[in-house]
Image (tube, rainbow, N blue to C red; front, top):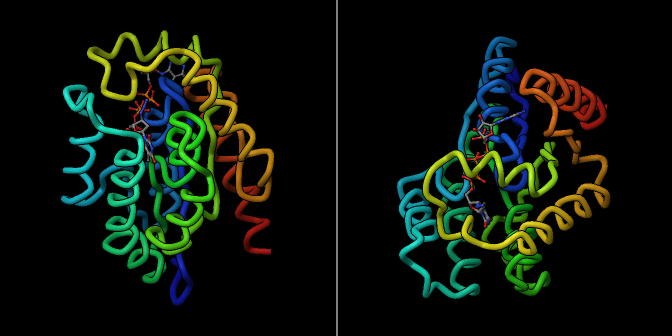
Length: 214
Ligand code: Z5A
Protein backbone atom coordinates (compact mmCIF):
# COMPACT_ATOMS: atom_id res chain seq x y z
CA UNK A 1 0.00 0.00 0.00
CA UNK A 2 0.98 3.69 -0.22
CA UNK A 3 2.79 3.27 -3.55
CA UNK A 4 4.20 6.65 -4.50
CA UNK A 5 2.52 8.36 -1.56
CA UNK A 6 4.21 9.89 1.47
CA UNK A 7 3.59 7.91 4.66
CA UNK A 8 1.92 9.17 7.81
CA UNK A 9 3.44 10.03 11.17
CA UNK A 10 1.31 9.05 14.16
CA UNK A 11 2.52 9.88 17.66
CA UNK A 12 1.40 8.81 21.13
CA UNK A 13 1.63 11.17 24.08
CA UNK A 14 0.58 11.21 27.70
CA UNK A 15 1.74 11.51 31.28
CA UNK A 16 3.24 8.92 33.51
CA UNK A 17 1.35 5.60 33.71
CA UNK A 18 -1.09 6.67 30.99
CA UNK A 19 -0.68 3.35 29.12
CA UNK A 20 1.23 4.43 25.99
CA UNK A 21 3.26 1.23 25.78
CA UNK A 22 0.11 -0.87 26.13
CA UNK A 23 -1.72 1.13 23.46
CA UNK A 24 1.29 1.10 21.15
CA UNK A 25 1.34 -2.70 21.12
CA UNK A 26 -2.39 -2.89 20.34
CA UNK A 27 -2.27 -0.20 17.68
CA UNK A 28 0.77 -1.73 16.01
CA UNK A 29 -0.97 -5.13 15.80
CA UNK A 30 -4.14 -3.50 14.47
CA UNK A 31 -2.29 -1.53 11.78
CA UNK A 32 -0.16 -4.44 10.66
CA UNK A 33 -3.33 -6.55 10.36
CA UNK A 34 -4.65 -3.82 8.03
CA UNK A 35 -1.60 -4.33 5.82
CA UNK A 36 -0.01 -1.01 6.73
CA UNK A 37 3.75 -0.95 6.22
CA UNK A 38 4.75 0.37 9.62
CA UNK A 39 7.89 1.55 11.42
CA UNK A 40 7.55 1.67 15.21
CA UNK A 41 9.94 3.82 17.16
CA UNK A 42 10.25 5.92 20.30
CA UNK A 43 11.65 9.06 21.86
CA UNK A 44 14.03 9.69 23.34
CA UNK A 45 15.69 6.84 21.46
CA UNK A 46 14.92 4.95 18.28
CA UNK A 47 18.51 5.08 16.92
CA UNK A 48 21.81 3.97 18.48
CA UNK A 49 22.65 7.61 19.19
CA UNK A 50 19.15 8.32 20.54
CA UNK A 51 19.16 5.28 22.80
CA UNK A 52 22.50 6.43 24.25
CA UNK A 53 20.95 9.87 24.88
CA UNK A 54 17.95 8.18 26.52
CA UNK A 55 20.32 6.41 28.90
CA UNK A 56 21.76 9.78 29.93
CA UNK A 57 18.51 11.73 30.37
CA UNK A 58 16.65 8.98 32.26
CA UNK A 59 19.50 7.86 34.51
CA UNK A 60 18.54 8.97 38.02
CA UNK A 61 22.26 9.19 38.88
CA UNK A 62 22.58 12.19 36.52
CA UNK A 63 20.90 14.53 39.00
CA UNK A 64 23.20 17.41 38.05
CA UNK A 65 21.83 17.56 34.47
CA UNK A 66 20.44 21.08 33.98
CA UNK A 67 17.13 21.85 32.25
CA UNK A 68 18.84 23.45 29.24
CA UNK A 69 20.99 20.36 28.65
CA UNK A 70 17.94 18.13 29.10
CA UNK A 71 16.06 20.06 26.40
CA UNK A 72 19.01 19.95 23.99
CA UNK A 73 19.49 16.22 24.58
CA UNK A 74 15.83 15.54 23.76
CA UNK A 75 16.31 17.40 20.50
CA UNK A 76 19.66 15.72 19.80
CA UNK A 77 17.87 12.38 19.93
CA UNK A 78 15.03 13.79 17.80
CA UNK A 79 17.32 15.34 15.17
CA UNK A 80 18.95 11.94 14.66
CA UNK A 81 15.64 10.04 14.63
CA UNK A 82 14.01 12.40 12.13
CA UNK A 83 16.89 12.17 9.66
CA UNK A 84 17.90 8.53 10.13
CA UNK A 85 14.50 6.85 10.58
CA UNK A 86 11.35 8.95 10.28
CA UNK A 87 11.94 11.02 7.14
CA UNK A 88 13.32 8.12 5.07
CA UNK A 89 10.35 5.96 6.12
CA UNK A 90 7.77 8.64 5.28
CA UNK A 91 9.47 9.36 1.97
CA UNK A 92 9.26 5.64 1.11
CA UNK A 93 5.51 5.67 1.80
CA UNK A 94 5.81 3.82 5.11
CA UNK A 95 3.85 4.86 8.18
CA UNK A 96 5.62 5.69 11.43
CA UNK A 97 4.17 5.08 14.87
CA UNK A 98 6.27 6.99 17.38
CA UNK A 99 6.03 6.75 21.16
CA UNK A 100 6.32 10.49 22.04
CA UNK A 101 7.61 13.33 19.84
CA UNK A 102 8.04 17.11 20.04
CA UNK A 103 4.80 17.67 22.01
CA UNK A 104 6.60 15.93 24.90
CA UNK A 105 9.30 18.60 24.85
CA UNK A 106 6.71 21.38 25.01
CA UNK A 107 5.01 19.57 27.91
CA UNK A 108 7.99 18.29 29.94
CA UNK A 109 10.77 20.77 29.19
CA UNK A 110 8.45 23.73 28.53
CA UNK A 111 5.65 23.45 31.10
CA UNK A 112 7.48 21.04 33.41
CA UNK A 113 10.97 22.57 33.54
CA UNK A 114 10.05 26.12 32.56
CA UNK A 115 12.16 26.27 29.39
CA UNK A 116 11.10 29.10 27.04
CA UNK A 117 8.50 28.01 24.50
CA UNK A 118 10.09 30.12 21.75
CA UNK A 119 13.37 28.22 22.20
CA UNK A 120 11.52 24.92 21.83
CA UNK A 121 9.73 26.22 18.74
CA UNK A 122 13.09 27.22 17.26
CA UNK A 123 14.51 23.76 17.95
CA UNK A 124 11.42 22.20 16.42
CA UNK A 125 11.98 24.19 13.22
CA UNK A 126 15.71 23.53 13.06
CA UNK A 127 16.63 20.27 14.84
CA UNK A 128 13.36 18.47 14.04
CA UNK A 129 13.29 19.97 10.51
CA UNK A 130 9.82 21.36 11.20
CA UNK A 131 8.35 17.86 11.12
CA UNK A 132 4.91 17.67 12.72
CA UNK A 133 2.88 14.47 13.22
CA UNK A 134 -0.18 13.91 11.03
CA UNK A 135 -2.03 12.53 14.04
CA UNK A 136 -1.31 12.65 17.76
CA UNK A 137 -3.14 10.49 20.26
CA UNK A 138 -3.07 11.97 23.75
CA UNK A 139 -3.73 9.52 26.57
CA UNK A 140 -5.28 11.68 29.23
CA UNK A 141 -5.49 10.50 32.82
CA UNK A 142 -5.63 12.16 36.26
CA UNK A 143 -2.08 12.46 37.60
CA UNK A 144 -2.86 10.45 40.76
CA UNK A 145 -4.20 7.53 38.71
CA UNK A 146 -1.20 7.52 36.39
CA UNK A 147 1.28 7.69 39.22
CA UNK A 148 -0.45 4.85 41.05
CA UNK A 149 -0.13 2.69 37.92
CA UNK A 150 3.51 3.64 37.38
CA UNK A 151 4.37 2.96 41.04
CA UNK A 152 4.08 -0.78 40.42
CA UNK A 153 6.85 -0.59 37.83
CA UNK A 154 9.95 -0.51 40.01
CA UNK A 155 12.54 2.22 40.44
CA UNK A 156 11.65 5.72 39.21
CA UNK A 157 13.85 7.27 36.49
CA UNK A 158 15.33 10.82 36.61
CA UNK A 159 12.07 12.43 35.43
CA UNK A 160 9.61 10.19 37.29
CA UNK A 161 11.05 11.31 40.64
CA UNK A 162 9.42 14.75 40.16
CA UNK A 163 6.43 15.72 42.33
CA UNK A 164 2.71 15.91 41.50
CA UNK A 165 2.83 19.65 40.63
CA UNK A 166 5.31 18.92 37.83
CA UNK A 167 3.03 16.25 36.36
CA UNK A 168 -0.06 18.48 36.73
CA UNK A 169 1.70 21.13 34.62
CA UNK A 170 2.51 18.51 32.03
CA UNK A 171 -1.07 17.27 31.87
CA UNK A 172 -2.38 20.82 31.53
CA UNK A 173 0.14 21.60 28.77
CA UNK A 174 -0.78 18.49 26.79
CA UNK A 175 -4.51 19.23 27.09
CA UNK A 176 -3.97 22.80 26.03
CA UNK A 177 -1.91 21.76 22.99
CA UNK A 178 -4.64 19.29 22.03
CA UNK A 179 -7.35 21.92 22.40
CA UNK A 180 -5.33 24.29 20.22
CA UNK A 181 -4.92 21.80 17.36
CA UNK A 182 -8.03 19.60 17.11
CA UNK A 183 -7.26 18.66 13.49
CA UNK A 184 -4.15 16.80 14.65
CA UNK A 185 -4.96 15.65 18.19
CA UNK A 186 -7.39 13.09 19.53
CA UNK A 187 -7.70 13.03 23.33
CA UNK A 188 -8.34 9.52 24.66
CA UNK A 189 -9.86 8.69 28.03
CA UNK A 190 -6.94 6.65 29.38
CA UNK A 191 -8.84 5.59 32.50
CA UNK A 192 -10.89 3.19 30.36
CA UNK A 193 -9.93 -0.50 30.05
CA UNK A 194 -7.08 -1.23 27.58
CA UNK A 195 -9.43 -2.63 24.91
CA UNK A 196 -11.63 0.46 25.14
CA UNK A 197 -8.61 2.77 24.88
CA UNK A 198 -7.50 0.88 21.77
CA UNK A 199 -10.99 1.20 20.27
CA UNK A 200 -10.94 4.97 20.90
CA UNK A 201 -7.51 5.18 19.27
CA UNK A 202 -8.53 3.20 16.19
CA UNK A 203 -11.64 5.34 15.74
CA UNK A 204 -9.63 8.53 16.27
CA UNK A 205 -6.99 7.58 13.72
CA UNK A 206 -9.63 6.66 11.14
CA UNK A 207 -11.49 9.92 11.64
CA UNK A 208 -8.43 12.17 11.58
CA UNK A 209 -7.00 10.33 8.58
CA UNK A 210 -10.20 10.85 6.66
CA UNK A 211 -9.82 14.59 7.33
CA UNK A 212 -6.11 14.67 6.47
CA UNK A 213 -6.74 12.79 3.22
CA UNK A 214 -9.85 14.76 2.22
N1 Z5A B 1 10.49 12.99 27.69
C1 Z5A B 1 10.72 14.35 27.84
O1 Z5A B 1 10.85 14.83 28.97
N2 Z5A B 1 10.82 15.14 26.75
C2 Z5A B 1 10.72 14.66 25.49
O2 Z5A B 1 10.82 15.42 24.52
C3 Z5A B 1 10.48 13.24 25.34
C4 Z5A B 1 10.37 12.46 26.45
C5 Z5A B 1 10.34 12.67 23.97
C6 Z5A B 1 10.52 8.61 28.86
O3 Z5A B 1 9.36 8.49 28.13
C7 Z5A B 1 10.58 9.92 29.55
O4 Z5A B 1 11.07 10.92 28.66
C8 Z5A B 1 9.25 10.42 30.04
C9 Z5A B 1 9.04 11.75 29.33
C10 Z5A B 1 10.40 12.15 28.89
N3 Z5A B 1 9.39 10.65 31.45
N4 Z5A B 1 8.56 10.54 32.31
N5 Z5A B 1 7.91 10.50 33.22
P1 Z5A B 1 8.64 7.10 27.96
O5 Z5A B 1 7.49 7.41 27.12
O6 Z5A B 1 9.58 6.08 27.49
O7 Z5A B 1 8.26 6.66 29.47
P2 Z5A B 1 6.90 6.63 30.21
O8 Z5A B 1 6.23 7.93 30.28
O9 Z5A B 1 7.23 6.02 31.52
O10 Z5A B 1 5.96 5.73 29.28
P3 Z5A B 1 5.67 4.16 29.21
O11 Z5A B 1 6.82 3.34 29.63
O12 Z5A B 1 5.10 3.92 27.86
O13 Z5A B 1 4.60 3.97 30.30
P4 Z5A B 1 3.08 4.18 30.25
O14 Z5A B 1 2.58 5.22 29.38
O15 Z5A B 1 2.78 4.40 31.64
O16 Z5A B 1 2.52 2.79 29.63
P5 Z5A B 1 2.26 1.33 30.14
O17 Z5A B 1 3.57 0.69 30.58
O18 Z5A B 1 1.49 0.74 29.07
O19 Z5A B 1 1.27 1.47 31.41
C11 Z5A B 1 1.70 1.66 32.72
C12 Z5A B 1 1.00 0.63 33.66
O20 Z5A B 1 -0.41 0.80 33.58
C13 Z5A B 1 1.27 -0.82 33.30
O21 Z5A B 1 1.31 -1.57 34.48
C14 Z5A B 1 0.05 -1.22 32.48
O22 Z5A B 1 -0.23 -2.59 32.57
C15 Z5A B 1 -1.05 -0.40 33.13
N6 Z5A B 1 -2.09 0.00 32.17
C16 Z5A B 1 -1.93 0.37 30.88
N7 Z5A B 1 -3.10 0.69 30.30
C17 Z5A B 1 -4.03 0.53 31.27
C18 Z5A B 1 -5.45 0.73 31.30
N8 Z5A B 1 -6.12 1.14 30.23
N9 Z5A B 1 -6.09 0.49 32.46
C19 Z5A B 1 -5.40 0.07 33.55
N10 Z5A B 1 -4.07 -0.14 33.60
C20 Z5A B 1 -3.39 0.09 32.47
